[in-house]
Amino acid sequence: MTVGIEAYVLLSMLLFCIGLFGILTRRNALMFLMSVELMVNAANINLIAFAFYHGNLSGQVLALFVMALAAAEVAIGLGIILVLYRNFRDVDVTVPTTMRW
Image (cartoon, rainbow, N blue to C red):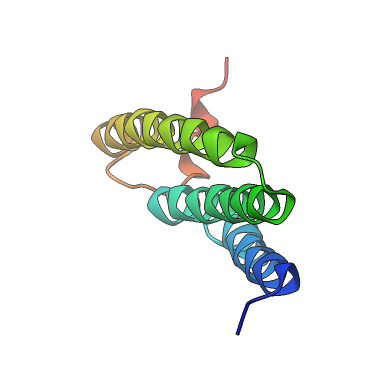
């Protein structure tokens, strides 16, 4: 039994919608970062599924680059969250509005 491309696209769409819901409703910076990672992983599933469907490796190579970019994004994001916590004693993303010029 083979799994069709529709199942991968449906899974990717579900992950992307969960990530988008997390970004739009959460104020915690860690949850915000985790939601962005869900959205990036949804894009990776699409890249790999369509690369497998078309029979080439270009989507899989691009997914590897996206995973490396996501690792760098997490490192930068955690650094920002640590500075946010150190300055405001909270990881709420609405608090640093006082940092405007």
